[in-house]
Amino acid sequence: MSCSAIFILDLKGNVIVSRNYRGDVEMSCIERFMPLLVEKEDEGVHSPVIQSGDISYTFIKHMNLYIVSISKKNMNAALVLSYLYKCVEVFCEYFKDLEEESVRDNFVVIYELFDEMMDFGYPQTTESRILQEYITQEGHRLEIAPRPPMAVTNAVSWRSDGIKYRKNEVFLDVIESVNMLANASGIVLRSEIIGSIRMRVVLSGMPELRLGLNDKVIFEQATAGARGELFSDRIVAKFFKLSRLETSA
Image (cartoon, rainbow, N blue to C red; front, side, top):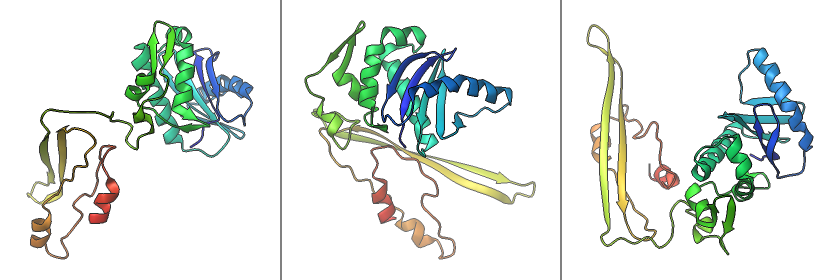
């Protein structure tokens, strides 16, 4: 993914804030966005990506604003959309209500956030809690710390340094549910087990916590032909080391 430029537009397509990251596109190409959008809507096409020549427009709408990313290179549309939604989330943390008036009142902060959240078209720090440690706001003024916090350059940016608790504890909840579909004769047509492991961690510092699953009994009781995957589909938190699970599976 690489974004050439990002724009914040009002409902008429007027540019409120823009940031050119790569310099490989003409900034005036944003003037074609609104006519292209109207043309697609008239055709009944509702897509967050519009292609015009060698320029890709990826956009989202929030309140009375359009947030548009333009790119001249092949890009991952899902990642660009995820980044745009993350921008909205961060702006809402700063301004509470993200709309045209708040953008005009706080454009200085928005430029600073754009500079920190993306570098040369590639996303960098997008965690609002980390950004608020060194980009602070009082009214319409911007205060920047003399140096960024260590969390920005850490391998794990979502956890601050120096966390201490008087008592180290880990609370673990295993939640399972069974879904089954059977016909009138009682024959099972489809069945699945959906489970989740929820943790509340109260640990000091940056420890590595290893969690072992007792799947040995399951595989010993199953025949060779009946063995399946322990996790056929999984969603894990961002701090989870998925490669470790795939290696040991």
